[in-house]
Image 1 (tube, rainbow, N blue to C red):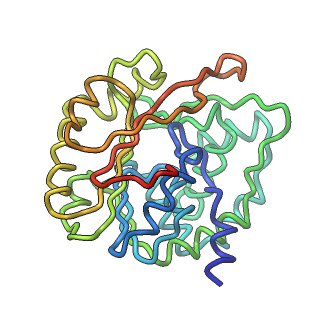
Image 2 (spheres, one colour):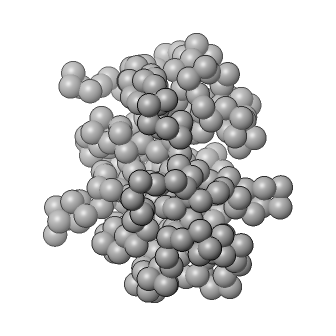
Length: 278
């Protein structure tokens, strides 16, 4: 039964800027080798969680709409699927849904998923009033926003997880020796290959990066298995001196046109030695 779930849940139901689906084959074995709980304080699209499917998980993010969507899928995936059936990928429908303010948790979750999968590059961005303001995306073929099988698989996976909206420091307070903590913060340093600089500096500052590095050292000293992904930049490397640092190369997904997406490197930082095949 768990093998069947793993096949269904490998692909997340959300698109997420900075998502780590490209990294799952590196990190999934590291998580599954752990014997304690799995803790992920920057959940985002959940690519790593849905790939590894740990037996016990504590998941969080500071994005309230995102967490509310996960909680609603955990409770009422079928109702969300029913609501998504009513949407169409048309410009009129997109902007009508974007401007709407659903009263029910099911309506809000369906709105979040529809906009996420049909907006430009899956970007989450709000204006000063907290309203989602990303324009409709441009696709060669209509995007698939009615992802019923993924939502049902996600509902099963989330049953083994505690999901909360809070700062990462709150999430990791309860981490114990043997727990595996995966930290994937927004990348904010002045990095020529980091296309999210402007957006992320408002969301996760350099001071937050320093807070995170300090927390990671506390977790390491506590005997936790710490896994971190971050920008490949000298300032980040300096923050994590004493950890094991591996550079991984991937294609950037930031540019709107495929031909403008270049190859970049990111850091995989761990508190323990990596196997030779990573």
